[in-house]
Image (cartoon, rainbow, N blue to C red; front, side):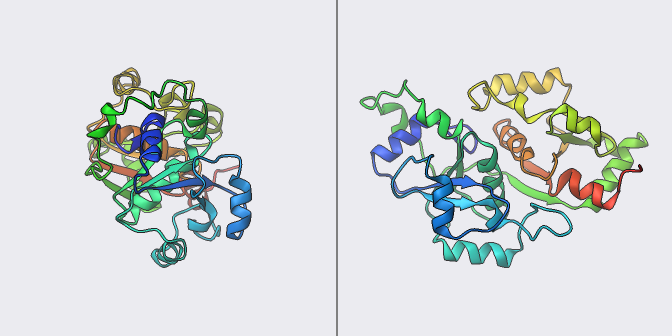
Length: 276
């Protein structure tokens, strides 16, 4: 395990040994659906017969004025109670790759869950896992899903980011402590971005099989982009989903404060519309 990532072989081990875990397939649709409909959307990605399905739309704020932001505490708690989540049972989120699962992980961590994990490489890695020796489980016996990294996840407001952006644009010394890191692909970034932000696409954190790069390669990635991990890094993207992949990487790099601008560029553009 690295940070909150759990490998496909380790999950195989946990499933084989009937460990007490909750495996959750994360999907995202444009509209709310009942539990049966959500399960139909997720039926192609099955790890266990008793896995659950989480539709991100159900733990997302009403899309007015900006879509896909964090829900209220009341909405989240209602969902947790209705779907039988608890703080003691370790939760492993997965999707086809890692994108939706990373957002689910951040949301649960934001609302106080400590034992939440993401399947590294997603269902595709699980499905194509051939190098797991089911007879050799010694390497996993000492691992403990209770040992969650002791970092803090925080969501910043548009007002917070506006101050940071102003400092960065005007080369104020106070702005040197901060970095606005945009995880979108370059074409989207070039169409519009938060002033003072730097572009590092989420895809650069991942290997070809959509697993997270090694710790050494993540360190090299930041070094090549001249990113100082000791700075206060505010992660952004289009809405606040893909930047959660960057947060997973920063946790691996021992970042103690994981900062997300929820709503990200869409929230920024709503408050600071681009001039036509």
